[in-house]
Structures are given as C-alpha cells and as structure tokens.
Length: 448
Image (cartoon, rainbow, N blue to C red; front, top):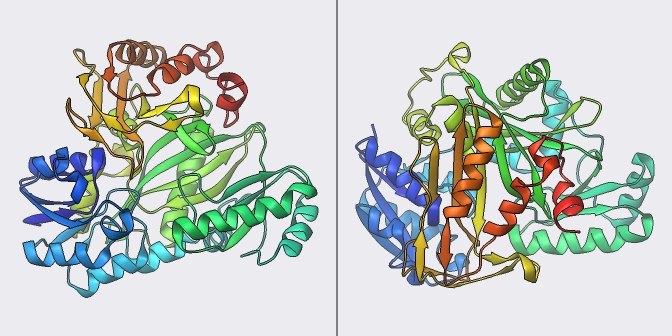
C-alpha cells in the first residue's frame, strides 16, 4: 500500500484525488504554482510544494520540479489527474527511473495509444472498427489533398498528439484544406510540441460515445458502461451523461466488448477510455483512447457505484481487480454539466477574477459538485476555465434532467461570468430532453 501520493495537478481533479486518498488512509502532497498558493488543493493536502511561477510550462508541466518534489517529500507514487502531464510518456518514464509509481499506464502504452494515427493501426489489427482515413501520418498538404479526394469530403484533419479539441479542423472543400491543415499543424505544435497530422472521413450526425475501462497488472480488463459526450462546442465537451439515450442494449454490449478488445490489444493497466463515433445507421467506429482519468468520470461512478480514482490507485499498487464484468450493473441515469468561468455572450471569452459570493447546490439525494472554488478565491487567467462540475443522478433520465435544472437554478457565482445560463438553455431544449442530439447539436440548436 502507498503511504504517500503526490498529485501533479491543480483544481477540482487535484481535490478529487486528495479526497479519495484521505478516505483510503493515504497521505497527500500537493504541488502548486506561485499564484495557486492559496488554492483549495494546497489547503486540503497534507503537504504542499511550490514548483514554479504561473506559466504551466514552468510549473505544472515542469517534470524535473515535480519529480524533485516527490523525492523530497518521499512520495511513493504520482497521480497526474487529467491534462498537463497525464498522457506524457516521457514523464511516466521519468517516474519509473526514479522508482516512483506513475498512477496510470506504462510509458510504452501511453506512446502507443497517445499517437492517434498509431492507435488506429493497432485497433485495425485487433479487429476493432475504425473510421475510414489515412494510413499513418499525412506529411504534406499535397498528400492531404490526395487522401481527402479518395475519402470524399467532408474530412477531418486531426493532430496525432492532440486533445481537448486542439489540432482538429473539419474541411468541406478542397479549397479549405491547405489552410486547415497548416493551422491545425501549428496549433498542435504549440500545444503539444508535435505537429504530426492524419485525416479521417467525417461521420455526419454522429454521437460521441466513450466506454470507461479498468485494466489491472494481471491481465484483467472490464468496462463500466458508456458515456454520451455528444454535446460539444468546438470539439470540447460541455455536458455528458450515462447511459446514452441512443444505444440499444445489443449495441451497448457490442461496444463494451470492442472496448475490452482494444484495451487488451495494448495490455492496458489503469483507468482509461475508449472513444467511439456512433452513426445514424447504428454502426460505431474507434476514434481514440484516453490513457487517463476523464473529466466526466463522475457520471460513471454515479450509475455503477464504483470509485474510479480509488480503483486506479489499487491497480497501481499491484492489486488484481476485485470486480468482475458480471458484477457491473448500470442503474439509473447521471448527467454532468461543466461550469466554466466564461462569457457565452462574448464568444465564450474566459472570465478570470475573484469569486465574491458562492452558493453551491445540494440538499437532495443524487447531487454532487466537484470543485475547487470558494468565496474569495481567484480564478486565474493562466489555466483552464472550468471551475466546477455539477453531477446529478436519478432513477430515470428525466429525473436526472429535472434535478440538474434545479441545481443550476440554485448555483450562484458572483464576481466572474459563467456558462450556467447556457447549460440551462441546453437542458430546457425539447430535442435534448427527448434524447435527439448529436455532436452538431450545440452549433445547430443552441448557438445559431
């Protein structure tokens, strides 16, 4: 058993991990940038170490400083959360070299699945259906045009190392392709230090469905059902739910089996997510794998009763999974709304500042708020704008929706702009309520 874990992250996910560790009797070390000195995660952890100035490159992405903090505090393991170094194979390798357990998959697995064009090839060989696209990396605009012509427009230019909606462009005509290819390449180079691109056919009117998996170091792999992540703005998720209102039980089981096959193909160990596109004809295609905990993991926890963060830690300790596939029962329905400090009326411009007043919803069974904010805290301009996640659970989807609407009505944040009203608009939309939505829903129905 680990006695001490360092959390190499900030915000609500750092708080989430600290809480799980405390319940398991494990001491925690928080790391923080200079402006995060009074952040909630630094206050809740047993120890806190400053790792650099505001810029993420000099603090939360500073591998040497984070490893040094772990060595100095005698932490036996590092949990990377999501974002920052969570899918960085170099960092995972550095942890191993320093005899510090990285709570996630091995570096070679991160490498194999982190490069999305490489992951496509692995899935093809494993017999998992993939979206029609290029074989490997597309190295020039001329090659991109040749492949796009074969696939037929529209196509999607995607970064092999992308994530969080970065390095993705939908292209509908050949005239748009060159600019889209170059801008996506430049964006992913700046964000991830890797400008390798590939091309896929755009699956129109699709739903974005992901399967949560857990794999241990003894070859056991299970899945925890699916999440519907179709509600997106510019390829970034806004609202997620589990289970998906679109899937039949037959499709649900087939997708779960494909996810397990995908994870076993790379010998996956830890919590991870296999992401699929589900089209209007009822077919699904592998899109990518996330080798980390996801922002939206709470909806799966609500419908399964399984603490995914605790399972991650147990797997990292070398424990075999105690849960079998037959033990997984999906019960009820859960929804998560991401609350961001941004102004939807100003093209979702970030809204840093100080929170003057805060009223968090609660009061009934099936309400959870994951956050790291408090009255008087500063929302910093240097990092992601997400400040809270509201998760509701109901025996039915309708009950979960109504509970979420009540929670958003109660949620008051003063001092910064938020997208709470925007989320309420989605939840009040008749098509959303009836479950008739896809990845184009927000652009077509909400932002017109």
